[in-house]
Length: 137
Image (tube, rainbow, N blue to C red; front, side, top):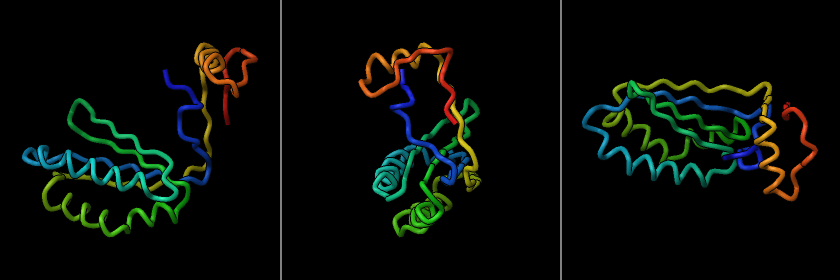
């Protein structure tokens, strides 16, 4: 089970890009390897905090990309290789997509007591005071 110590450090002021898309039917075979290349490139970008991707039962894909600040997000958006991938996405891969770029104004999180206890048992730096759960804000 993942614990907060395993998760990215989310904070106010970070920039979250929400990329929602649907692939064209014929694009799936070529898309996977190209997406993996672009993810590897994104992971080298200064200021990248986290990337998560999900696919809904209806085929919609949602990728959440968190950057430390607007400048880091802008650098990724304008990276030459990413620009080429964006063009390929429009030309070959995506039937549709939308992008929302959001600035995080507040972060709060909750961790159930059993998750906190497990974290304390496996992490020497964790607070092991127990309690009724841990709310982080």
